[in-house]
Length: 62
Image (cartoon, rainbow, N blue to C red; front, side, top):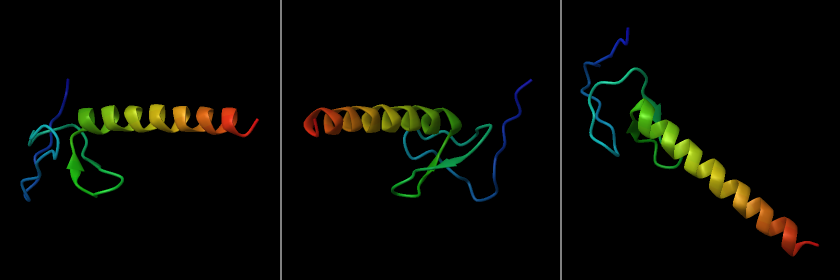
């Protein structure tokens, strides 16, 4: 059973506009509110980007 939480301050996901979610997250750069799904997707994209940057740096430093 999923429980959705709606806050009194009427939070809204910065990316998709959802107003109810299991967990609210914050954007690491802007501080805007994100729903759980968008927060997880964003974290995955950022992690992938960091890995590719690190790989490029390793190749250049050889």
